[in-house]
Length: 322
Ligand code: NAD
Figure 1 (tube, rainbow, N blue to C red):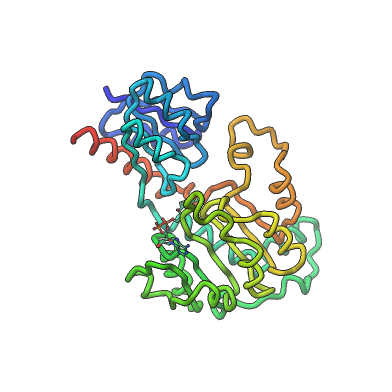
Figure 2 (cartoon, protein in one colour):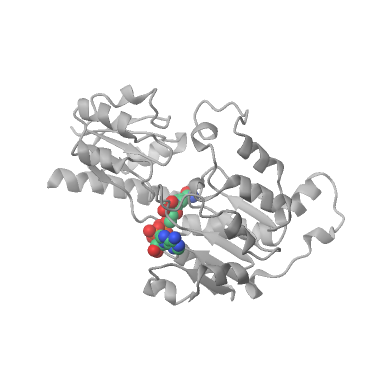
């Protein structure tokens, strides 16, 4: 029986893995992310199934090679956690899940953008403290008559554009390869024009190591409107966090929301004790409610999880059939 070791499987995901296992794979479901310390758990497997924040670097791939593991798949869209050069060197097959419910991340990006734009977190944080007076700080525009700028209008970005378009919002986009689907909902402009005009800027660009690190830097932020808010649900490496923190403190932008964190390996790890040691994450949490953080839950929905596991199983099935 083909044995798969899957990492980073949350408690409530176990039933999905079992229920959807139509090819009867031998499953070993590990709650921890793959690290250098627990890599031995892969011994005896034919394949491993990773997720973002699992360590798929050369060190771990070399071990897999030694143990005869030929398939290193990820159940995520992003695959920057797998060293493709090392995989090629060891003649390993790598596959990802290029498409699962794009509404999962698109809806979260919208929720965060609208919470910032409508000052919802500020309002609820005041009422939670028993302050029901109407603060002028919660006065806002309306999303439907504002401008949203989406950088990266692939599957997720275009879906967010479609949803905002449905609200009557003016949607601008920047993408070197605009799809026909996106063109129905987006007016494509240069990145600079998008930043200059948008009230909500949403990032859906893949992270390419060494190519677009710190896309969101001081220059990027200085081109945004002072009352605009920024949402990053893509990858943490795209953000220069000290520059973002400075921009919030200086009032260069009005708000920042992120589903991705500078120290995900630690704070999303199984053994995290609530003690934030990363100074940037700590500073970001201190800026609430101007800064909203979520623990990489963009795709943590039932439809997305079902798609992810189904496509992963199909990926394995395809390589086994060929
Ligand atoms: P996709 O490949 O369908 O679309 C990416 C788009 O970005 C493409 O159209 C591409 O042309 C465009 N692009 C690339 N470089 C660009 C640049 N410099 N400027 C503007 N556009 C650029 O990917 P997707 O499914 O929409 O996912 C986007 C990213 O979202 C993923 O790579 C992943 O990192 C992230 N993601 C996050 C979560 C989460 O849980 N928060 C879940 C899924 C995906």
